[in-house]
Image (tube, rainbow, N blue to C red):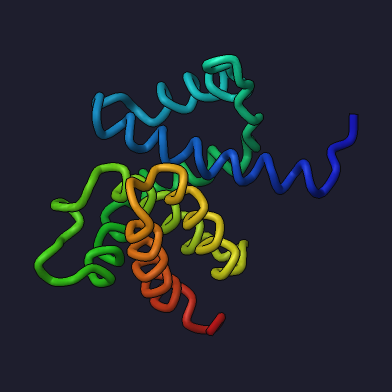
Length: 155
């Protein structure tokens, strides 16, 4: 079975969403990256939840985001801190946004996906988790700052 470009994009988008959930879960439960990757790939991708089938995630994208976010967490967190207001270091922000910034930072520093695509994709993820319309705007501003630091040649 061949996968269309549109289906591949949807799978990559789902992988980004799952990476944010998985990074959040790792922080909340102190699980290892390998345990969380295994759980998500075996049980979350394509799961039936409240009578809805969850999307299949792109395994390669998901693993890259997870492994890079964990391996380079200190660097990504420092980059995020520089993008945040001085009074709000990464340790003080909501764990969901911390997970999102780590996943997005992993993709931004990987340098394979254009920064504008990374920002757009993770703002869409933020919209799924947001409590109001200000949070995605906050995420957009922080990601824009991070992208300009990680990939200045792209701007």
